[in-house]
Length: 326
Ligand SMILES: [Zn+2]
Image 1 (cartoon, protein in one colour):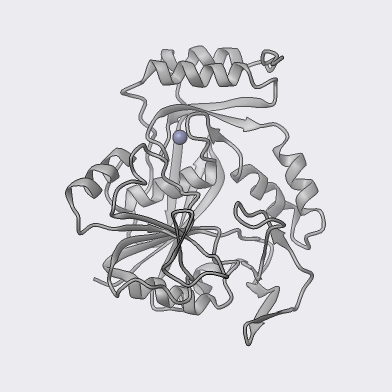
Image 2 (spheres, protein in one colour):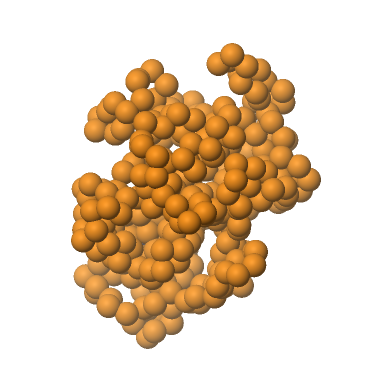
């Protein structure tokens, strides 16, 4: 039988939203000429959906702790955001063999936490979604859905089937494309309804997309220069590449853990595997990004910027983006 939450604060969390106590979320952009700031809006509350979330929170058996309340950038719903109290311990176990800094490991655990009780998007996904919306001049995912419905020439591509936007009906829109990489399938074909694409040789025509998004992908590709060049090719002039990658700020320079030579991986540093929703046993990490990340990712003629997202005054997630020249 499920037992009620015993964490102080969770009960208050159920009441606070109705008193207008949503917590402030801010962000800032590194780089010239970019707007900063912002606040989650708490209007248009669906009481039924909130009650469902409150029920989830009350039934979690004390594993989740309320963090904040606001508009979720991923699903567009007003939602509770909660932390899984076992996340840091779980991540510490997973990352114990990795030769990366303790600060990197803690930051990694924290950005994978703080998930939405409506759609279960974590901080990284919601930060990613928020940056995409800001760059498109939108405040909510509903505006993205409306744009895709009324403008058939507007196209959004996400290179993962486990996508950052979770609004209802979005996946069914023809202008919203997602893909995965299955190395045993020809590019452009489908597996279980999901399109197969290799980021290093995409099957889309030039200038096809307004936005290309990838979430923690570029550390896994064999040739990042080829991938960045392909992303640039399929973007329209003025289009955005918006992405996240894990970065160890204690590393001065990005380094390869493995290199692809004639299609085979040559390991340079001990192998690290990331969890992967479609590959049992995980996916190998081929490089560790360091403090030179903006320079490293600007090599393919698109200047890269970083948007740093804060939660309650603390930096929690970085989102990177580059714009193709108009
Ligand atoms: Zn959500």
